[in-house]
Structure formats: C-alpha cells, structure tokens
Amino acid sequence: MTLNEKAIKTVEKLLKLTQEGKIEWARFTDTRSLTAGTDCIVDAGYKTEYANSYFRIYESRYKSMDDEGRLYWTSDVVIELTDWNGVALWRLPLIPGMWDLLEAVQVKSGAIEDKLDEFLGSE
Image (cartoon, rainbow, N blue to C red; front, side, top):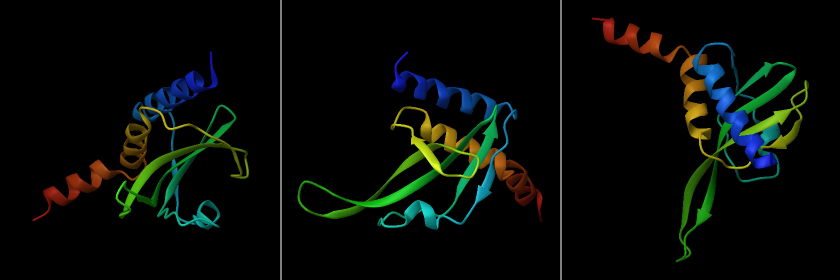
C-alpha cells in the first residue's frame, strides 16, 4: 500500500470513528505555531489521540492568484500526524474526504446539533 493510499484509509477511519462517537476531538484556538512565517489564517483547530496516534485538523485560509493576476482567498483542510507534544510529524496530502472529516469533527466536538435544537426550541 502506498503512502497516499494509507492517507486515504486514515481519513476514512478517522471519519468513521468520529461519526460513531468512538473518537473525541478537542478544540484549540492558539494557532500561532501553525501560521508563523506564513500569510495563512487559521481560526481554530481540533486535536485527538487514538491508539497512540495523535492528529490535528484545521482549515487554513490563504491568498491565491488567478490566471489574470487577481488575488482571492481560498482554503484547504490540513490534517497532520503529530507527536504527543503537538509537533507535526507529517502533513497528509490533499485527498477526498478531508472536508467531510472536518465537518464531522466540528459537529461532534461542538455539540452543534444540541445547540441548534436548543435554539430552534426557544421562544
């Protein structure tokens, strides 16, 4: 199995475990180390530990340029394998399913559905 195939399987497994509630993600907002020396913007991210493996996921926004030289903002999902201290060991390549995983993490870790149900049920 190639490294890219392993990355795809990793994202699939993280998504499944997250959706099933078998893995919990903690939100973090100190993103200075993620953006130091870059023009990227990261508002917050999520980190988890499962089976002695540590991961973090976040959306990185950055400026890009089109063929006509116009600047615009775009973003990617970043998933990193880290050590126990949060130092990145490897950044997974951009692969299908990363946005789905980020959305699942945001919903599960922030109790989004509960908050929306509470809001919709209020007078």
